[in-house]
Amino acid sequence: MTTLIIARHGNTFDPGQTPTRVGARTDLPLVDKGREQARAIGRYLKDNRLIPDVVYASQLKRTQETAQIAVKESGVTNPVYTLDIFNEIDYGPDENQPEDAVIARIGADAIKDWDERAIVPPGWNADPAQIIHNWQGFAEQIRAHDDNETVLVVTSNGIARFAPHLTGDFEGFKKQHTLKLATGALAVFRYEGNRWTVKDWNIKP
Image 1 (cartoon, rainbow, N blue to C red):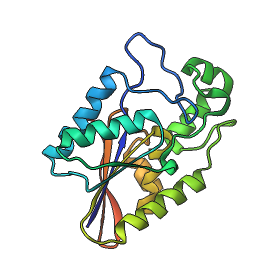
Image 2: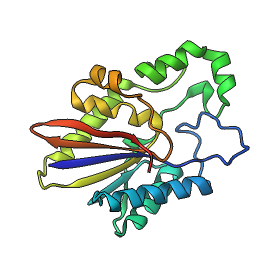
Image 3: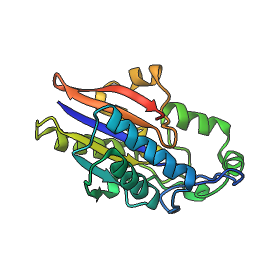
Image 4: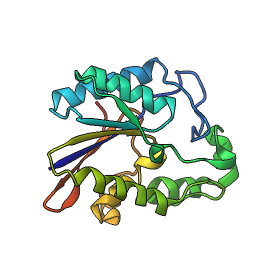
């Protein structure tokens, strides 16, 4: 049985700051709250016997830092491997813009479609088919070993929301869960019985 843990990076804004759409071209580090969220992920992995054998993260500072802190907190010294397929999407003209400005440009319905149906708003540079293909290829690679491996991936909201396609029933998943992973939250997938299932989603340690 292969276990795939997908975690979203921790916070990149302090209280009082105005959050923005932080995408592939905005490489922010974690703030103190984000580092605490990363430690909480590590403690959760340790407490629930989900210690990762292999760890991957995107190229971005926020995912690298989250992964490194979580791994250390879980009690192991595994390296963090970088894979650019887990980089956040590019929000185009809405990159690094506050949410009210984004809504003013594309409308609230476009944001709702993105949040509830993973439909990419106009102007955003994201290819859902390619993101899904990347998840499927990665999942096939890690399960091919068939050695009860536990794999941790630290990525961003725009990428993580497509991972449930691994189950082959994305529509069914949407009826039971929100697509968005909160900052510092994680999901647990398992490959057993010749299929991927979502055991937990949007767990906030």
